[in-house]
Structures are given as structure tokens and as C-alpha cells.
Image 1 (tube, rainbow, N blue to C red):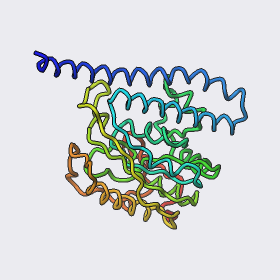
Image 2: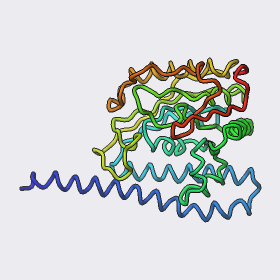
Image 3: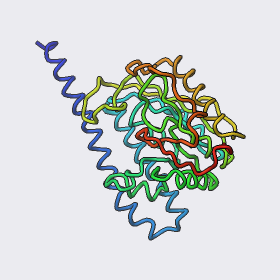
Image 4: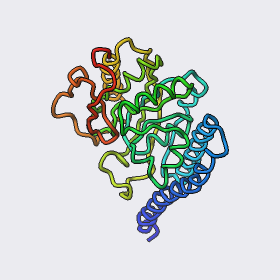
Length: 290
């Protein structure tokens, strides 16, 4: 009888842990929102951005801690700690799930490129604006603001795929990361997020329960020097990620293999991508300069 009850009880606990985590994150964001609205009137702009970035980092770290305590997740994120305090660089992870940005930001007070509509989101908008996060509604403005942020001494979080991974091992990379690295003259630090679950991957409902606990670890990869030509860096990055992830210990086996060869960045003049994978075709720099 006792053994018969274990399965249903465990399932109920998994649902409780999952939904508690989601509600807790929402409450954290709502608590921070009025603070984020008021701070710009009380602090100089530079200090407001610093406080905004650290506030989000601390909040996300608390959230990750709660997920670990409830045993919804098993995390190993400590590799990112070595990047704190280093000169500005682009942090470039792969993107298996929706939680990836939260995990990176929980360890590093970065500036990040995000969906433009999140700037108007009730839960995230005020905090994102305070922290100086960069919307992707305009490619020209996105690139210029990213370069400016790096020159001010802040790491920049960029997901080179532009959207969550939809095929093994990675999607085609957007060209904007190469343009930013070239013009800001900063290196690109590759980061690999390994997970054993498809939870919050592209197309996965936020309320659909996965098997718990989920294991998620982060490891640092190669650091690429500032490029002389942006498109060469993008091509090299894509090849490097594909090779590293194909041999990873927690390969995302639920992803389909590509059915056709990826279009090389060389054949997509001036194109980039937003976080939904839609092409952004208005390049702010002549492609011959990439």
C-alpha cells in the first residue's frame, strides 16, 4: 500500500515544486518593479543602471536557490563566477531553454539583449529598463547600444542563435554578434549550457510538467579575440559550438537533426535575428565591412 502511494505523492510534489517556483519568480519581479520605477529619480543614471543590474542578479540568484532547495533543479553554475571582475566581453551561450538567461544573470550582473516586448512586460519591464537591457526592435539601435554598454565596462549577454535551439546541435548564428565584437573591440567568451531535460525548450508550455529534478550545468568554452572581420568570427563560432555540443555529455537528444544544410552567414548579407528567430534585414553597417 505504501509503495503504491509513493508514485502519486511524488507527482503531486513535482507539480507543487514547479508551480511554486513560477509563482515565486513572479512575486520577486513584482516586488522589484516599484523599486525599479522609483530609483531612476533618486540616483544618477550610471548608478541606477549598476543597482538595476545587481538587483536582478541577486533576485535571480535567490530564485535559482529556491529551485535547488525544492529539488526542482540541480545546478552547477559556478564556472561563470570566474568572469566577474574581468574586462568587458561578450558572453555567448547556447540556448536550450527559456531559463538560460536567468541562470547566467544569476551569476553575472550583465547587460543583455532581449525581446523588445519585454520592456513593456508588467513583471520584467521596469527592471529591464533600469538595468539598461537592450531591446531588439531596431538592429541599428541594438548594435549601437550594445557597443556603448561594452565601452562602459559591462559584460554583454548575447545568445548567438537568436532564439532557443530548435535543431541539433545548434541553430544558425546571427551576424550581429560579430558586428558588435568587431566594433567594440572585445572578445567573445563562449559558454555551454548543458541540460538533461527539454523543459522550457522551444514550443514547451510553461505549465507543462517535466520529469524532476532537472540537471543543468554551465561550463566555459574558448574565448575568441576581437575579430578583424565579423562574418568570419560568426562562422567560426557556429562551427565551434556545433563541434562542442555534438560531443557534450548531456546532448539535447530531443532536438531534431537539421534536414537541410544551414545557410552560411556569408550568404545572408547583413542579416541578424531576433529572439523569435525572425530575420532582421536592415543592417546598420555595410556588409563589405564585416
